[in-house]
Length: 234
Image 1 (cartoon, rainbow, N blue to C red):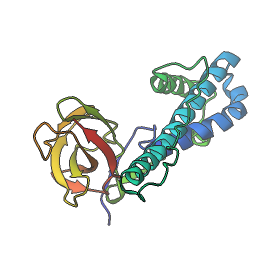
Image 2 (spheres, rainbow, N blue to C red):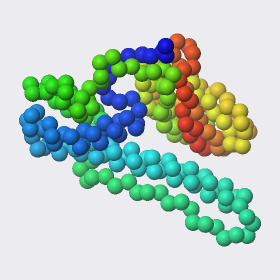
Image 3 (cartoon, rainbow, N blue to C red):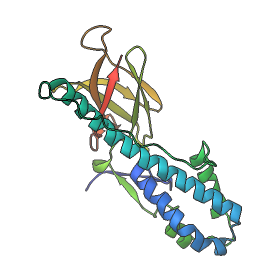
Image 4 (cartoon, one colour):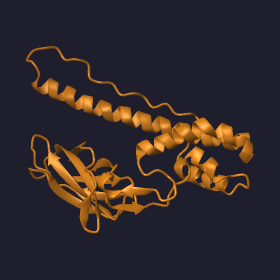
């Protein structure tokens, strides 16, 4: 039997699941609005939150894909066929948000969901259809758990880590220098945001590499390694 832990938080723990929830909520809130007696201003606000999350999520996915293409383009420029003219570098997609978009929308969405659940006409079936409830007995399979962190290079060869621990106790982080095969342990964090200190191969010399991570529970690494994330430290 695989290990698992219970999670009572209805809010999805991974970005893809969060996007699916917002897209579903956006598509179905009009259906349940009459039963819940939601006013038009609240419906517009809820839809704006869903649209903002989806736009940022999809833009970030596209941006990460473009970054990968940029590294390939850079490598081709440095080591490609001599004397050939350069190909145009990949271009990044612009992010277009509503003029009414605002910060802190996840916190507001959680609060508005709480208010919806306090509505006299609210039912669990409505919650399930909107995907704002956690199915009874639903568990997170530890063998399939996977980190989904974001990394930002900071001065003095440090890296800022943000994201969610998904109810886990901690996470370990590993770094691999570009052009090498060895993954080097660089840190252990029990809460986020946090910082990692990476020592370059040559003192005070900027270098590029990749970071990956894995959850830790009961002092043991569990689940799957994250995707590798390119980073430039300096």
